Image (tube, rainbow, N blue to C red; front, top):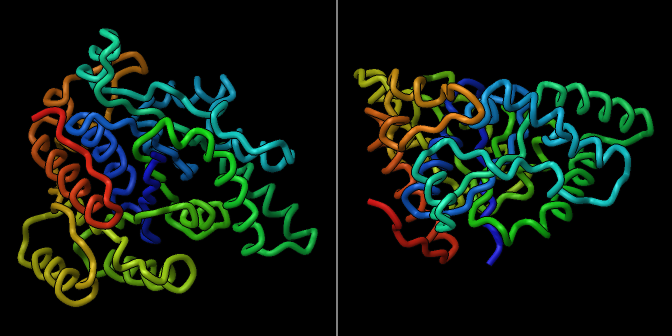
Length: 306
């Protein structure tokens, strides 16, 4: 069975895309024993830093790993292959590490990380492509075809691929979206984020997936329990995105920020030690997404941990 590819995306920045990506990767690996590949297509490299640390991201780059090296493969017209650019170990949880040491793997996280160099490589590619009469759409298609062929041999190694997409619609972002079976839309319960979410939703329906509503899982993040936030959230659920599935609401919490701060590339923490007061939120996020994926695709992931 091949991996289920899920894009985590929104036009609005700062809505918790990378945090949602990491929380979901950990939740699916921990509770369901899944092998998860995180592909970071955002040059800000936030999810990569959360998983590997800043030093780990640079170490990966120095080893020839990462999305910017993968993009260079396309530029150099080399045969498509994603495997060489993947960091096979992006695990931060002690329970997963210990199980692996006992040769009883029960959940795992790997990463194809981003690096700030990605945006420079992408800009150079765009300039060359457009100077030869190419267009953003033809570049997006060519990149999507390359990525699809490059990932095809490694997809059987994973249960889920999470694509952390940048907050814009560059050809690389569009290529990533074209690969997705499902779409997760993180958003914040405020007017500006709602506007960005509506715009992204309409663009995706028009250009990527006409049946987006059936494949869209919305997560309200950084939620402040105020009357205003409750009103905006209700409007999202009952008016603007009433035909979508909603995941659990993730509260704004210092626990989330602390959970995303890994001490060193070789440091690990227990699930409860990492997530503390938001452990239940990660649990609910993974459980609700598993139910959503099962209903849309027929996949069934039994619980491995309680």
